[in-house]
Amino acid sequence: MKITFFSVVRYPTEKAYGITIFYTMQALEELGHKVSIISPDNLNSFGKMSTKRHYLNYLLYRLIKISSNERINSKWVFILQRLIISRLSKYTIPNKTEILWTRDPLIGLFNFRRAICRKVVIEIHQPLNLIEKAMLKVIQFSKKLIIAPISIDLYNSLNDSKFYFDKNLIVMCPMGVPKSFFIKSDISSDQSVPFGEFKIGYVGGAYSAGVDHNISSLISCIDEFNSKSSTMKSSLSIFGLEAHLLPSFQANFHKLIESKVLFLSVRQNHDNLLAGLQKCNLFILPYPEGNYYKSSFPIKAMEYAALRRPILVTNTISHRNIFNTNEVWFYDPQSCSSLSNAMMDINKDSSNTNEKIKLAFNKSLNFTYQNRVENILKLI
Image 1 (tube, helix red, strand yellow):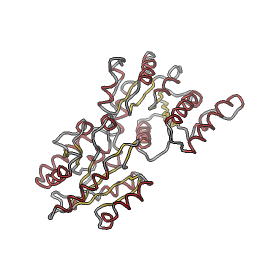
Image 2: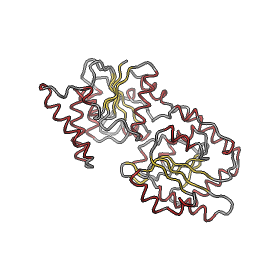
Image 3: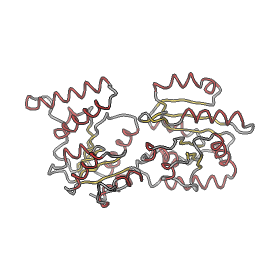
């Protein structure tokens, strides 16, 4: 089948959404489908933007390019860009497209009536407002809609008192784990349990969409652990810190960096990332409780599991929707002592620790990108 993914935001990118798009489309290609990815960066390659007949499209296209280059951080500018890009999608999505795949209900609304389009797959990554739900309802009447929420909370939110969506059209669609994580999942001899030193790894930035990931508090807890423990020491490696935040973190935590307790690196591709992750002997997800996390699915949890290391996660709804106490170690994100106790528990019983590692790894095998796309294709 001819499948077109339409993104209303910049692509390619090393941000999480871009990585998910890339591996999802790659999995579809490996299954024999023909894939195209369209975004504001390559609209002109697909659409008719330069002839007199399409002069309005060209003006709209230029407006998008100018506003994107200026990097104007405004909610209203983004809404305007979204409306313009959605209109242009009618003239850029190839006529031979059989499956339109997107994260934006507005793109689906503009294109679902096209006769050649057999299905419209809409991934849901954040809570929908009433207007977006109304868009999905309109598309559903065509019997072309497939809704793919990434988390349990988003799945449940699709059936409220105002809207009812056919459950036969909804499929859970968490992000996947790249194959490379499974290939490099062997535990080397220096990572045996119990550990002589805790080498903790965290993948991600300090913020997402302006939401604080609790990183500064985590660093303080690691420092406190080292100051109180006379037998065990720990270090924290952060992979993916925002480049513009690096100077301030280096200034605020320069003593920990100089003493090799804290290691900072900015976002990098998966090949380079894996080399660093292999040096860690346990991983952590320090996210606090909150609506932003409740509706998300932190796929890095499964990437950690695929690498066969113990996993520390905060005791939150989001993480309990993914793991149980037989697979990971939970701790209170507001308590450094809770984190310390969880860390020490990893070293208490090597057989118990190895069993948890095994169970978490087995769960991660269900979160490949091939499984992700096959679950959706079953509804087509």
